[in-house]
Image (cartoon, rainbow over all chains, first blue to last red; front, side, top):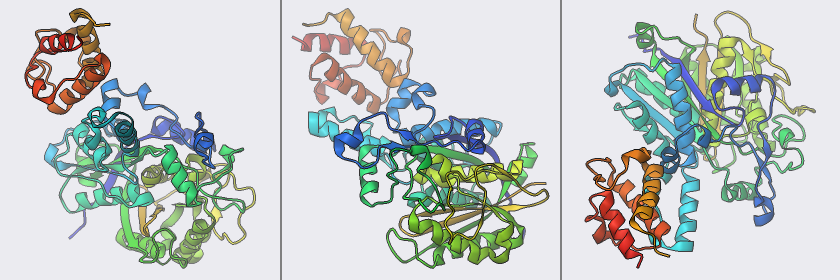
Length: 414
Length: 82
């Protein structure tokens, strides 16, 4: 029995680098940082040690109608903006609703809505808490709004696995198509957690960079002086489709999503297992699922968030999986550009991986002034690198608090 | 300072437009919230909450079901201001 091939026929995004995929990709290739000093006084007001983040480049209010803004948490707003672009990019396919699925994740959920409603309750009492509060704060809200947007009836799902959520959503979307539940799945991730409480909480766990005097230089994966991640926000959405369905309607195909690898560390609530056991297992499972050899891999979009411990564990895991073949794999750590979109990261980085293969250009990693001497991979630094011609594959890694590991394998299409 | 019916209608229309996206010119006294404007119960409760805020009145839940049209709501709010 031959397995259903899954391809990508549409992409959409709103990110710290731009309000759509084209502007985001252009800024990424140019090595632009999306991190900026916040235009509020949260740091001073609450004593938060971090005064910057990678906020979305285009405010939703510039794109959405007022009633849409009022009925959706920002996390859902970003997902809807990205979905509209992705769906149009796929040619607004006419498909039976029963054959369309929606899988959209957020790592944190509708935290702006939750905390704003709590403020309202405390300040003004229960009668002022808005009736739309629950449908806005529930973590499946972005998935549900995307379901409504495209009229999906094959199922709408919201898988939650912290910073691996966006990639896991795409993985689940692939499985929906392979299992025959759907012909098309709108899949991805979103996050909108740039609120003082989560910033304070991440800062309390000492995972955020505190390079307040240089936001653009703060996210520096694999640099000796890295001191934590930069909180980002936004959404990435892809339209997944069975290759047969895409061919039948003459859709443009960006790439093939050939393999999904999942594992869990079974080790610690936040720390990755030091030997990279779970990460290795996920990458191997994804390659096996894709039926590919390590020598087929020529590009890797690393999870690499710019934390002291996490970056190296991943780098060693990649070396362990790829062995000598790693010498010819161009590694990009795009969180140096975008900051860390948490639940949106895995999806946005899947889009970067797809574009890298399609355009044969690996995006740069910025801010690596002094590479960590223990880092033993071929990092694409400062400027994009041309990828080889022919049929090649790439891996996109995403790992999350809780020990969730997701590796996706993308290949070029001939 | 109490507002007259016309002023309440204008204010209520603003709330309805913001909440639902319905064009201001489609909002009129004789329009039914459910049949003409297609406003669901969650939106209705949101409009009520915002109207209470804006006009500094209380609209009890028992009363909301009697507010079939925009005009019903305008009359109730106008009187409730006193």
